[in-house]
Figure 1 (tube, helix red, strand yellow):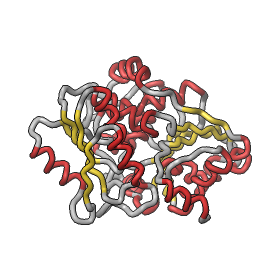
Figure 2: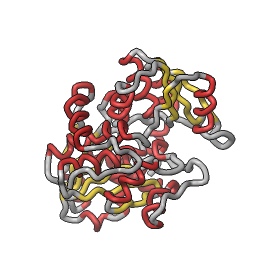
Figure 3: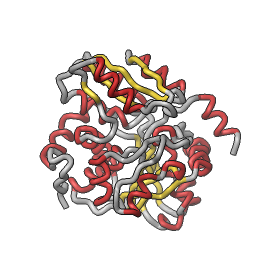
Figure 4: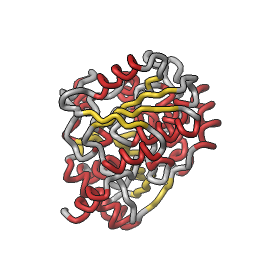
Length: 325
């Protein structure tokens, strides 16, 4: 079926997606697709890994950031991020001649803070236990009239930018299932939109950290639910309070289910990528494989694509994760 009409974003049409698919790929790197017979045999499925670790700025977020910022006239950008979106916004701003401030939790990985700064971004650290990122963003917008607030997931150019990853995956093979990490829902929304634009029938399954399982709870309840505070999960890219409104509308219609992944299995998946694939991934990027470890029977004898959303992990945390199974 073609893309549905979304009340929260009527601009998200098949025509718009087609335009983005024609224009954005020249600015992004195609995703890396890897088969792995050893992991496939262990998990009982035909596994393909779609890795965005080699995307510009080390994660899928650059797809959304460039598509978003290239579409707005404002020169000063404010965004909230635990790291990957901040890096992507900073680099896209640099390429497009814009200036940006990135509001980040004080607990953000040092490598991600340093990366934002390396692309010319201004980092504004906040203690999320005392002030939310959203509140700090509002303060900055009040201080800079005319600035543009770049949302990390809840906007149609973001979803459309992320859909280009789906384009890469669907053009490569026919999968029974695509498993995708879920935080705010920007990436999973993009994959669903890509599937519907192509009128494919692939199941989309979400993988969400169990300590921050608002999306899974929302799906069960049939209404958008929120975490009371940013969840304390090892998957720092999924420390969101809730799905975005647009993302919820897309996921509610288009996702098959969401598997809740304990942090211990996220880290086991991270070690699997290192041991079996020689691939360095961040914890959030390991969520999809973690979902296969949680419910392997759901994927037996199926052609499965696991999305690795990024590889920007603090070296100390990564070393500890590898050494302490």
